[in-house]
Length: 579
Image (cartoon, rainbow, N blue to C red):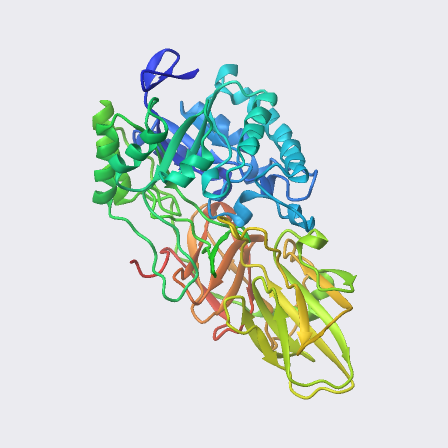
């Protein structure tokens, strides 16, 4: 097993350096796991690291899913077959720019919920989840003949809190679940982070992207002995939806220089990310430091292998250095995934959202405007309908908006309000008699990091001037099944679903380009590729070839309006202008 002696790692008694790269099984499809893991090995790395996403494994409380692209057992088996060691970071919190940092949304039904501390309803939920997860991980633990050589306790905990009793609880729970191999913590190389996140009897590693000597020097102040390791070497970065933001890149020569520093220090490291993949569906998270900053659908991260599985200059540069350092002769690399250029696809059928509420939504009644989480909804949209009686004028206000709302009066769009707007209101004009008020709210990703994670999606309250509205029909729209949509003649009104069909070569990848569209989601053969937004920087969506058949269906759910009734499926991606 992995042990520590004389400031070094040892594996089965032999000195060992961990040369790792991060691949998140849940950000890809199982059809691509083996080829990406093989590319990792052929790059000169000996270990793959992955987080575990609690929010998808237990989407509904007590219902566990470890199938499809959540089949972590198959991922671990594939890594073992290729001779790769594995580092598992089971959370329960993972950050990862992933919705709610990987915590399940149903935790937030408890209006008193506290996370990442010794709040019993939270720790009870963690324990139930860990017992399900660890019985699946147990055969792969190194002490049981598997390939998991290390696991992390929590994740960058010092960036969030300092409840050491909670960290000890996570550690003891892992042991009680049968784990007997190496444990570690990881934190940024800052005083408060290391102070809050380390445990006395557990090796701490540091996460950073540059200035190797400074980072390890700070770690040594808190941990004079033990091997040096960078738990996350940030060789790229992620993007936010913002008209002023560009796609983050990092030059290969800059990454190579930092890598050489690791090797000079005889340190272990984990490339974050080796392969980033895609935030399919509603899974991208957000940051919020005063201003809400939602993460884009692509998690390309400017990593060594790009979003669609292609090699980068960074990959070849790192490979050359690592193979030389380890004395390994280079072998032939597997080919990149094949791409195809399909061209223009007409969207010739339309389905109005409001006409299809009975086919897409679950209806509930509520006196107050409660959140998605209150009703057990994981993600998507929530519509608040109120029948207004009497004489009204002035402004309708949305308090506690998370995240973006379309406001309709008698079916007419009065305005779109975003949580970053200074004033979250629209003019409703003069109303008398009976009128329909509809507020459609989009969940654009829960906050993943920092002190502002305990937000609920939807609205806190809806009011006209100072008067709170009560008694709502609420429609929960998760968009998980669009098979019952009823299509009719095209209408000018949005939001609406626009559907088309196209021929393709199965297995060959392409990218959906949405010129002329404003904001929405794309579904291919029932699979949610994720969010698009004209604000950028990302301008196309990754469509993996494994999703394609000879004859295919595409549905675009456009929220704001479209200049075109067609999309283009091309063999090139567009992540926006680079910085």
